[in-house]
Image (cartoon, rainbow, N blue to C red):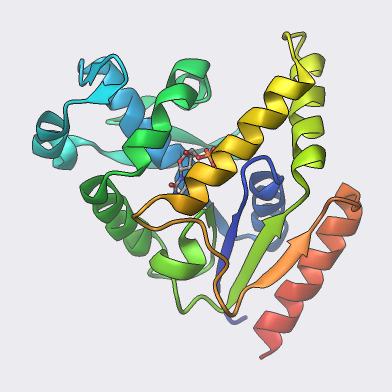
Length: 229
Ligand code: DC
């Protein structure tokens, strides 16, 4: 069967990673979480003392950028890929608050983006991949056969994060979360290098009012159409 590249971009907390992972599993494609790659570089910076408070020691990171090896290996237990940094499983660490707080400035550095985009293009060369991020349909794979741009209202996305935190028994303040969602949207769409932007030929999915099964069915339909073309 024809193998394609599926690019899934969108706002934070829009549920794009979950839908990308589920689709990849369903159709036997490789799933690549590019956010995890920016997070892994951030963890490397933390481990190597490249942060001075909020500031990154850019020259030091630049000199080390080619020593940072990021790969994904399937976790047999979860059925999902775990992120490895220089051979060490860092899946848990990159999801923590310290990395989440520091990743934004790392993801704005041009030399970091160039290195990771080149790696992402290499990973997708053989096709048969579902890649999610912010710039996949615009920069990494402008010729992807299927591009989806996922969004939902900021209220709905904040509510999802609020519910997630509550479920984990963590403290959650809805107004603070909503403010954070709106701030991240602003940073993502206004940064100079590769801002979050819908590719002209991407299909928009606003899942504010959709259930997970409805979303799954919609996505399968788009995939079937794309491989039939
Ligand atoms: O999707 P996420 O929250 O794991 O992304 C982590 C950070 O990386 C977030 O600040 C956006 C950024 N990112 C990016 O700039 N480009 C991508 N392709 C993916 C993520």
